[in-house]
Length: 204
Image (tube, rainbow, N blue to C red; front, side, top):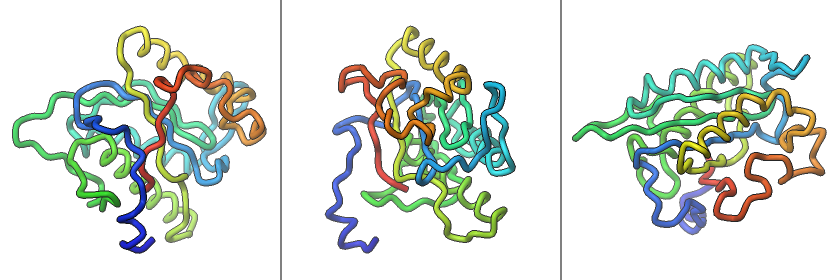
């Protein structure tokens, strides 16, 4: 995409929300075309292939590159990643270190912000997967991701349960390609009000 079109493209982040502020965030990132690139579900358990193992490794490495980020529960599914990221307090004058130097489409990257962290993760995982399968420049992820601010312990408990039980619910999961006619059903907050639905953010 050229710079002219990028400047006129609408950002779909939550307006006025500071994505650097401390808190817990529920994240979902899907593969390009929702293809089952990372493995399969067998006997209600995830069986990751080499690509899935690389993605899991990149997710575990997030705190190594972004020191404010802490990992809570997460799972790499055949065609998406669910996880909870916790952003801690920013130390005075501190700056995060990305796996690469990402270029924001709608402005400068903000060290330690949720978009910068997830952009870095997606970039690192894409590079490793493409190196292994010999497809330089190949698409691995769909544009953007879904996030939800976790507001209290009750919500955190519900999100944790949803993430950990995701492999058990694969046959009903709306991200399962076999359930393409069920999009929007079955998610933790799929039938909640607009206030609680995941918000798609900017693309990578």
